Structure formats: C-alpha cells, structure tokens
Length: 367
Image (cartoon, rainbow, N blue to C red):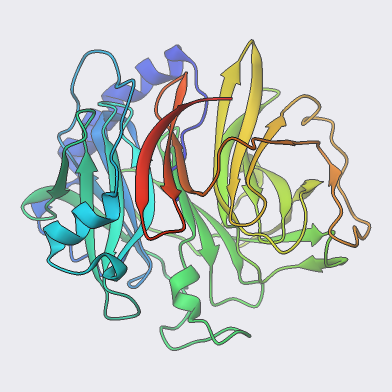
C-alpha cells in the first residue's frame, strides 16, 4: 500500500541530484531475492521500494521508468486478475494483488502480486501502462539495494488470531526527503513500530515504538500496527498521518521518531469500529487539502485537513461504533475499492472488486 507527500517544487529540485547520486552509489546490479511482494512506494527518479513481508526487508529497485512528458490521465483494465492469471499460468483465484503504486515519473501503475496463497506464494511485480498494457517487471539484472529490519517478528510467531506476525513486519511504506518510512510490527514489547531508513540504504536501526489511544476500545495500545499512512506537512513540520484497524486516525511528528524511543501519537479522529483502512492519500482541491481513505467495510472517506494542526487528542472511549474528532464524508459512488493511489493532481487509480470474481483497474476523478 505507496504513499506520496505534498512537497514544493523547490524540494523536488533539491532532491534530484541526491537521488541520482543514490542510484550511482547505493544500488548494485543483480537479482533481488524478494520472498514476498507486499507494500509498494515510489521515490523520485523511478525508484521502486518493495516491502518484503516474508524476509522483513525493504528493497529499492531502479525501474528505469522515467518517461518525460505529461503524466497519464487514464488507466483502465477490465478483469485485471484474469490477465495476471494468464501471464502467471494460474487460475484467477490463485492471484492476489497486495498493493499498487503509481510511478510519478511516468504515470505507470505497479502492482505487487502473489502467485498462490499462504507462505508458499511466489512474488511478482507487474506494470500497467496508460495504454492498459499489462506486463511483468522482471526482478532480474536490475540495480537494487536491500535493507533488512533488525528486530522483526520471528517467522513462526503468531498473534491472538493465530496470524503470522512476520506478515505484519511491513504494513506500509513511504518515501520523503531522502528517507524511507516503514510501518509494521517489531519483536519488542511495544511491538507497533515506525522506522526511518536513510536512502541510499545504510544501517537500519530498531525504529520507534509507537503508542496510541484507541477510542473504540477505550484503551491505549502498543501492539497494533499502523495499517496505512501518508506523509503530510502540518505548519511546516512533516508528520505521518496514520490509520489503524477499527479505525483511529493518528498523527506523528517525524522529528519525534528517534531510534529506540517510545512515542505517543495524537489521535485526531475515531472513524468507526469493525473496519480496516486499506490505503490513504492526500490531495488538494479548490485550495483545500483532503485525506482520502479506502476501507474494507466503511467505504471511501474524505476528510478535510482544516484544523488538523490544533486537533486535540482523543483520550476518552468512543462506544457503539461511533465517530469523533475530524469529520468525514463517505464517497458513495466509489464502491468495492480495495486499492487506491493518486495518479496525478486530478485523478486517482483504484482497484475495484466487483464481488463476482473480477478485479478492475480504473481511473476516477478525485472527489
């Protein structure tokens, strides 16, 4: 699940020389041993970050996909899962799309795919062009680098629902200002973790343990991971705006995310229980910034960021599936969205589950 912060044109210009230096100095040509293709994110210059949830590692891969010219305005693929199944030589039911991310350098859409299900599933990366052509992006003889998380959950460790905790070692990724931010679980007592990894990759520290107040549960929590997040500038300071299962929305100042520390986030909204957020993006319309959140049971939520800087932390129970804090509206026209990313300033790309076995890639105007 990829996520791109709003940045100024000046910042982008300043980043370009550093990124070119990173490609030259930090990536070496070879075949990355990706065991599980999970969350995706893009950095500048077409660098794709892949969260490997099996190996608990982040891979940086130079895609060489930096087409100049205007970004794509429309990407449409009907029955995408059937096309992927045909390319992989399996039945559509054996294809799982774990994440999608738009390459801002080209407008092409990248997909993290599993061939099969469970621990034996094989990873694959696919690319979808603006013409709708679907092709596999081969992870072979490409410039890449690998950053291994030092304190990930043991591969055999399980949670209270008997789920393997290693699969939650990386739940989301984002690149901003020369660093890759990684959300997920660690093997620490305060398991919920946010990491900041300098790029080009160097030593990876143990990250920051994060705590939140969960209104629907009426308790502070330290073991539930961030499910999806987006970097966002609040009064000149970079924050991570993060959504959790069941569904607190929390902000963390990036400056507080120091290695080995414990940080309590500010719960700025409670968006209703029995729900898991899937993706979150930030965009601007009519001079106003908005957050757009895709959910597995509560549809698409649109939240204005007005007042986000002064929002008081929710630290009282919010019972009965109620909501509190920042207000949202539901975008009823968007049904069945299971993946979401920004295509450009006007459009989003969504993956739609039609509930009849079809997965369709569509371009829709940002609401």
